[in-house]
Length: 132
Image (cartoon, rainbow, N blue to C red; front, top):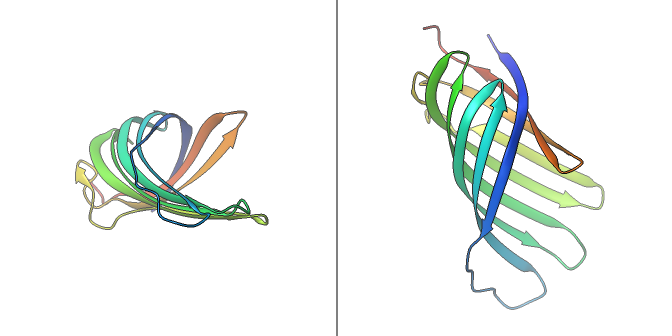
């Protein structure tokens, strides 16, 4: 049975050196470091690769290893991000990598939605865990 939790997180993104290729599209590589509060409490570390065009379109992919306490269980799992941004809006998918759960979160599945309001980051995480 799926459960849904919400909360907030702080994000520290650190650009990493990247030799940019030719053309007008800007490439970026960053490490990401998050602190989660709310329905899950803990941290994550990850890597992000992105591109931005001169017209304002962009895309990124990222993976982050999440180490949290969730539903009274402590463990870890990996989230995979895929995002495309155009003038019409953003399409963002964040999914738990299958079989990436460890500790008390072994077998976790799920997806996450994020919202940024006034510079603050919020999440909604829908997940399932095997019966303990």
